[in-house]
Amino acid sequence: MSLQRQDHVVDELTVAGHRRRGPGPPVVCVHGAGVSSRELLPFAEVLGERHDAWAIDLPGFGASGKPDRPLILPALADVVAAWVEEAGLERPCLLGVSFGCQVVVDVAVRHPEVAAALVLAGPTVDPRGRSPWRLAGQWLRNAPGESPRMMPLNVADYRDAGLRTVLAAFGESIRDRIEDKLPLVTVPALVIRGSRDRMVPQAWAEEVTRLLPYGRLAVMDGLPHMTPYRDPRRVAGTVAGFLSEVAA
Image 1: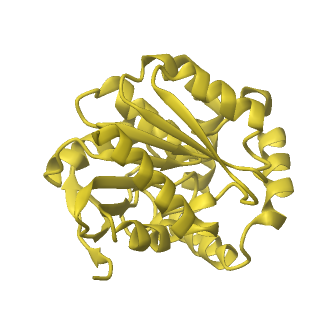
Image 2: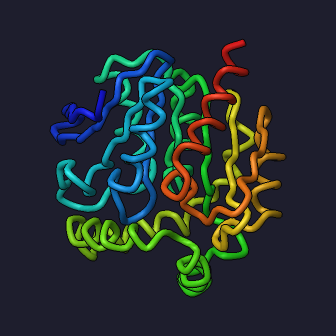
């Protein structure tokens, strides 16, 4: 079965979702700063072979509704929590990619009843990179390792969102102190890092894992920052294995 579009309305905003119904418990994928679920659809397609896989667009991005002003990170997290209830999902795994990790961690801390587990793929932002210039430098160093097929997706996402919303999302990612929230996450969490990720240093991935009360780390050999896009099948297998252990 291929992905199907399923939208839900949260606080008068349409939240676009793409779903592949699989046999296992639900997994909801949340994209990074400035982009949309476009980059996560191939991964959701593969993950849907084993799980009820979703990829959603945060408000302001992709096919979702555009608020009057860009939402701050807690507001984005509140939308995700309300969307889970609106979609009728029973304690899904929330899988964040890059800035999406910051969103799902905020959900898990402020709405602990929502998620049964977290997956943090390329968790940002390393405190040492917490400035626009350092973040831009990390992005430039990482870009050559990403798939060239991702560039037109990024361009389309930036166009859809608009400069104001894109810059606001990156600003939120820099201001958010995820390290203060990680110790408050009460569910099992898997941290995924590509061994060639130039945005998430190995030391930071290890620190994120250490700060999580029930964290574990998987390093994906040869992959850059966007692990789910670069090798969706290998990452989906890692996520499915983790969730099998959590269920057991």
